Amino acid sequence: LPVALKKSVEILLHKGTKVRDSFDTRDLAVTLDREDPLGEFRQEFLFPVVKSPDCRFGIKKKGEATVYLCGNSLGLQPKQTREYVEEELKKWETLGVDGHFSKVRPWVTIDELCVDNMAK
Image 1 (cartoon, rainbow, N blue to C red):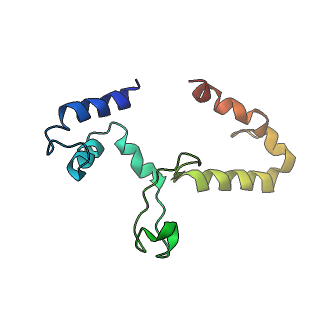
Image 2 (cartoon, rainbow, N blue to C red):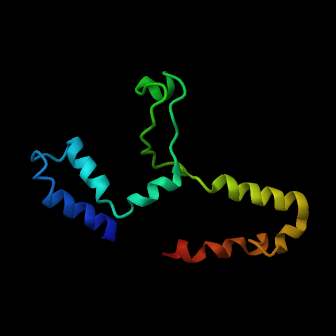
Image 3 (tube, one colour):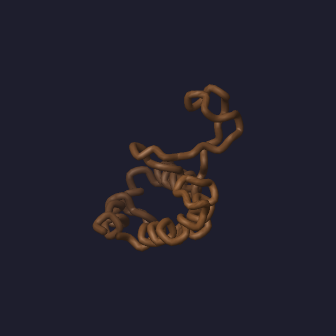
C-alpha cells in the first residue's frame, strides 16, 4: 500500500475506535484530515463554490464549497494551471511554430516532461 494510504488505515484502526467508537463521525474525518501526510497540498487547488441553489441537484446552499469526489474528471484545478496555460498561449502568440523549439517547455519534446511520473 502507498504510505499515505497505510497512514489512513493506521488512523482508522487505532484512533477510529477512540473517536466515539465509530468510523462515520465528523470527529474521525477531522482527525484523518489533520493527520493526512498529503494534506498540505490542499492549498494548491481551487475548490468550486456553488453559484446557484439548484446547482448540483440542490443539495448545497449558494456560496458553499463543493465536496469533490468525481472519479471521471480531471479533478480539482491546480492553482498554477491558469499561469501555465497563459504562458503557452503567449508563446504561441509570439513564437508561432517556433514554440516547438523554445527554451522553456519546447512543444516538440513536451511529453518527455511527464514520462517519468507517468511510468510510476
